[in-house]
Length: 228
Image (tube, rainbow, N blue to C red):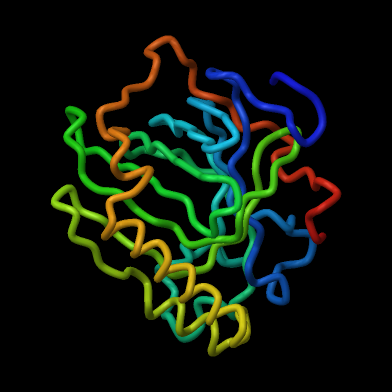
């Protein structure tokens, strides 16, 4: 990392953590950490305009699971966000993911490829603007997402989960309205083909010398700004 304090920047090749806080804190199992998603990533670029990171195939991550071990998306939607949860370690077996986040934006943009570096799509993950700390960045997912195809067509994703999160009290009306507004702002960027969509990131490739970042034992460590 270069620089000091809030202006500190990571250098290409640095390894950091890309994390999400648990939306369902009221339903968290006793002793479960406030972070429920943690993905070790390698820094591609870190400037005042953009943080770009690479999550490599084979990365060991942390994901949420129900307290009985069931995968979250195997649980019926009606109880998906009310059943007690904990976390589990798992390996990212898919192709790698390039993640792009502009400071202050309530979303990040992810790029997916199929085998052979065939570009598949962009994925707009609506979320809290990222908070930086010495070990990485933290956010909170907002359920609603957008998929953007190479032909620039787009569609909303997970609207059922967004509605259910509101119904069970994980998101109040004002927050939900803000998420919708953020989504509309993202759509304006998409339809205007603004950054990062126009910037050619689909042609980017990782440095073959980068190792897969390890998942640290203290992946759940709590920066001062994160609620416990």
